[in-house]
Amino acid sequence: MTPPHSDPARKRVFFISWRWRLVIPLAIVLTLMAMAGAYAVALRFGGGLSTSQDNILLEAVRGVNTRTSNLYQRQLQEAQRIAFTVGVPEAVARREVDVLQDTLEATARVANLDSVILTD
Image 1 (tube, rainbow, N blue to C red):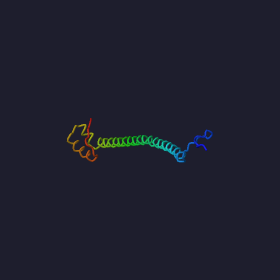
Image 2 (image 1 turned 90 degrees about the horizontal axis):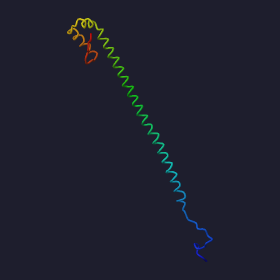
Image 3 (image 1 turned 30 degrees about the horizontal axis):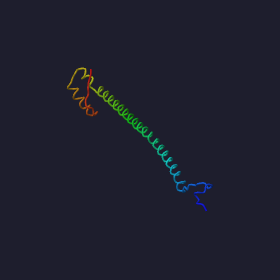
Image 4 (image 1 turned 135 degrees about the vertical axis):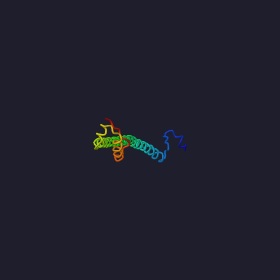
């Protein structure tokens, strides 16, 4: 009897265990799926962050616009109220500084204004 590896008619077969036949391809497939999932998650949340920042910026701009508009309206109302206070137009026309100071000081304090500028 001849040894099995010396028989030329017999084909040579390499032994590969089930571990290598099953685990390695499965590991490769799972790695590819994990990479694709990580890419999809990063793409979704990465783009969402810039959208979120844009929304925050838009809300801040709207808030500032609302506050400035309210401040302008309040100052316009106070200016009209001071301009039409009894005695103020006449005191401005006569340039009576003492009367204006007493009248406007109290009016400005009530309106929570820092200063009042009068022009003729």
